[in-house]
Structures are given as structure tokens and as C-alpha cells.
Length: 352
Image (cartoon, rainbow, N blue to C red; front, top):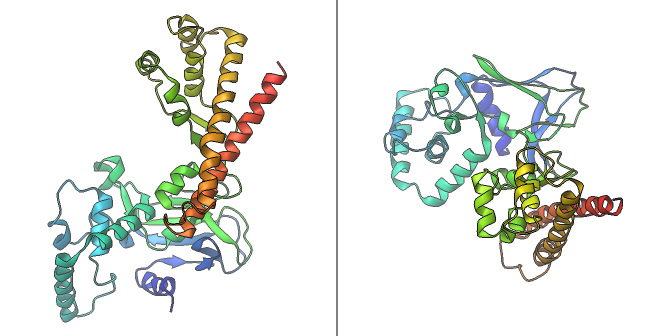
């Protein structure tokens, strides 16, 4: 019996309800949730009672009292997972409870870094943001809980199922009509693929509407110390982003400063930051030319070289083939963002 089938047996004992759905292996996506029959709009798919949630307050004292009081909720839940000798199965007898306590004490002594790291990654990739009267008193980053079965829903940037927390339960409802065998997803948030890769270990194929790439490595090395000081004083230093449509306003501010006729003449830039014209079409054209050159150079000198290294033999000893393939896929996406931006700039400059 596969692990997700054992999970369903355990979930049923906890009062977790699945309606018209089941976990299954999905090629290239691990385990996900699929429809077992035709589903209607706004149909209840999953109900997780709040009593089944694993939170800061459900961690056994045997574990929590051995850890620093300042430990994060992620760290605490990871310790709970790593030291859970019972699988949270129902305990029927005093003898079983005593045996569980003994096993837990032994595993507390035997916990090693690799086991804890694995549990931490599970907690980091599977927690949900949750606010109730108790968690509301915690820092925002610690209002996280583990939800059995709900964490098997994969992420989609559009058409995700509707999720809702109530006083008694967490529910997921269908966002439309789904045929048998269709995968059902939820939206983890408006995240670019770099965030998804770092936090969850995957990237979205087929165009993530929230995708963007940071241009700090492109722009920051071009700034003089004085220019950095000017940007920092106006809270515009760093966090420069390029998405599928354009660069962000922060990037425009940095480009306008770089396009100033001299390092000592920044009046036009100051006017632009303050919402004025800032040199108008002429300065915008300079900024566009500068961005075009920077993106083209970075694409050739960094992005495409990274792709070649990952897909060639020079990095064969680094990581696994699957890891290299995933990183190469992300770099191809970044290359696509650069290519689109370059084409857009070339067309704009040509039409001026």
C-alpha cells in the first residue's frame, strides 16, 4: 500500500472528509489531487476539522520543553514531525501510550541533523497561513499550521479551488466544473518562479502570470557609490524587477539616474522621482537604450552561459540530473523574459 493510501486511512480516523477527489501520482508533478467523478461548481471537495491541524499548540510538551523558547513555528513543527514515533495513530490502551512515550523519549535523544532537515523541509513546503484567536497573538510569520491531505493540492497561478477557514474547519471547494481524472489545484499566492523554486522546489510551466526576475545583478554593479547613496536616500536601492510586460518603477528610477548626463547633474532625476517629467521623452529614450544594452549583455554573458553549463557536461558532478534539469528549465524561463523585454525595447526605440 502506498504512503498516500495509508494517509487516507489515517485521515478518515481524524474526521477529514474527501468528496469526489483522491490523491494520486501525476507524471512530472509527484502526488496531487484528482477528481474521481464529475465535479460541479462550488462543490465541497475537502473538509479538515481544526482538531486535525498540527500547530504550535499541538506539539507534545515532551518535545517543546526541550527546545529554545525562541524557536520558530517551522522549527517546532519540524521537530514534532522528526520525533513523531506514532504517526499520530489513535492510541487505544494505556500500554500503547506508555510505549509511545518511551519511543518518543528515545527518538528525542537520537535525532540527527539529516532527519531534522528533512522534517524542516516538509514543514516549510507544506504549512498554511492560519489565524484564530490563539495564533493571532503570534508574529505573522509564526501563524503557520500543517493540514493533512490539504497539503497534497498542487499550486496553480489561475483557476485554483476556493479555500476557506472557519471556526470549526478548513474547506476546499471546486472553482468550476471538472471531469473525472482532472487535477485540482489551489493557489499558494502570487509568486514568481524563483520564489516557487526556492520555497517549494518546482517552477510552473506554460507561463506563470506572476513570474518576474530580479535585475539587481544587472543594475547594481553599474552604480557608483554616489548613485547608490542617492538611491538609498530615496529608498530606491535594489529590488529591481522585470516581468512579462515591463520593468518596475524602481528599475525606471535607477535607469533614469544612470542616464543622467553627468554624475553631478541629477536635477532631472530628482524631478522624475518626485513625479515630474524628469527630462521627458529624451531621458526615457536614454534609459531605454541603456536597459537594452544591459539586458542584452547579461543575457549573453550570464543567462545563456548558465543554460549551456547546466545542459552541457561541465556540471555533471553537481547535484542530480533532475536538479540540473529543473535549474536549466528556470534559466530558460529567465532567458525568455529577457528576450521578450529586449524585443519590446528594440521595437519601441525603432518606432521613435
